[in-house]
Amino acid sequence: MQSTTFDRNPCVLLVETDETLAEKLSLDLREAGYHTVVATDVNSGWHQACELQPAMMVVDRALSGESGLSLCNRVRQSGSRVPLLLLMARDTVEDRVACLEAGADDYFLKPYRTEPFIQMVRLYLEPDTAATEQLRFGDLALDLTMRRAMRSGRIIDLTMKEFELLKYLMTHPREVLTREQILENVWGYDFMGESNVIEVYIRYLRIKIEDEGEKRLIQTVRGVGYVLREA
Image 1: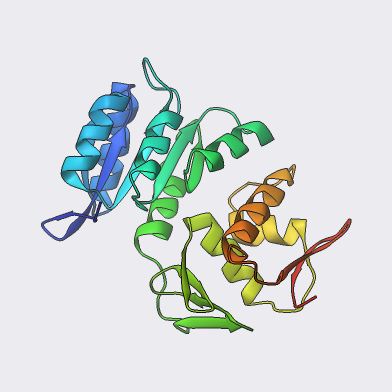
Image 2: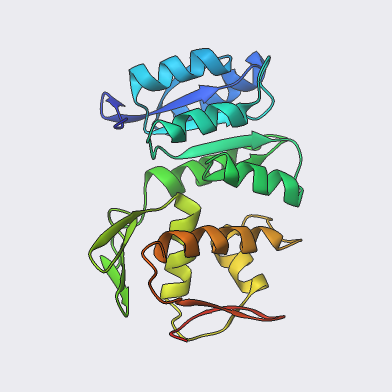
């Protein structure tokens, strides 16, 4: 699925059962310059995603009849890399891991707050491309414009959070980064607390960048954090 725009405004598909919340989300997004379409359940959300090919999807985890996680899974299984943002009521390690494993790029905790939500949307739809276009470490390269990695000529597709995590590691090569530093710089916005979710993302990154048996570049520093270096 490729992204669609309406009158040059990126389209954000909202999949939300709560009509009041859907109206508030839609109004705030339109005022921020985005086009919005609302679906109320998993099936209609899936059909709208296929038809509209939105620039981004915002999905409530607690949808009527079926979890929003199943919609995220379906979108990812179709091969789409559209940014997926989950609206969630709880913030536990289990919830974060479920979010990641369903293919969502990020999540936003209820109760809904306009300013931080719009900031998060802009992070995904208006990336800063003014920086150096590519980062390199050994045979690993990170394309900042296309938001994907390359290793030994192999293209590696990344979710948004995988990209941000690898970018942070590659901008601090051979520097031991604590879990607290990673949480603050990659997740930010009040995401402090248990850091188990970092291990999950590191595991997914390693699987992707070592898929062809390449040597490990992301090293664990036991009791401290992680470092990008050759063993």
